[in-house]
Length: 301
Image 1: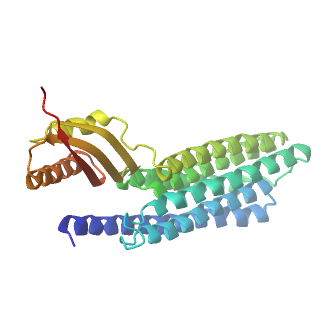
Image 2: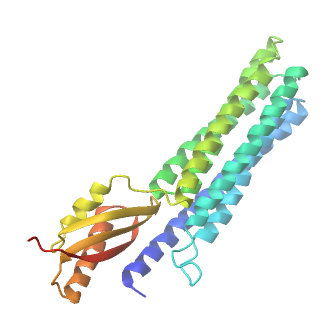
Image 3: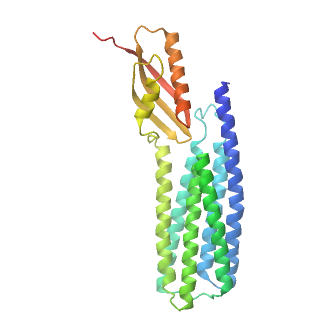
């Protein structure tokens, strides 16, 4: 096996291992938050808090989906998957988006239902304390998961952090509803529920857009001149064109056409092709593979 390929595989295994550990920790925190809301929500007969707890369970479910997705994505290249399994991570991020859409429709339904028949919860100081503590945990989870997702260029961690962020807004809406309930203004509860549902819909759209861009081979590097400048700096290259990119930010595939002197020997052309690949991998973070199509440069008359 090529040493550079083996090195990339080892780095991928380390990356996926880190992501998996992060998801397991976040899964425990999300389910702890969910159980706290559900148990006390049932005790206090607060349907909004109970519903918020079940929404938090969806965060835990997305973590489970993420762990399964990462486990599959971490598998090395094989005969059936010569480009690796990294797109499975993106595929599973779309499952999280679908989960968000499901939660969105349920909240819209619940909000409209409560507009017709407002729910009067039992409100006390412990209700506010539990909500504030769970919000603090969620804020920590969102910031930590999003930063680690950006650092590791992980679609799963980033999309899951956006999912958990919606839980913060929903929890805030519950607190607002509890305060309003103290003043017998129960109509605010379903209104806030509908508003939060719209936030969830937006997060689902962002995740879906990002995932579909990868799966539909949308260009990863929009500035082709950046690639062109690196290639033209390689000795022996006369021109380059038909530059295309696809994949993910951490798994970029580039193919391009390069023109060299028409009388150049095959061995020299092959070396230039190798130099171009190395230059692009060193010059642009995340490049996994480069396909160079060599063409003879016609001599000017």
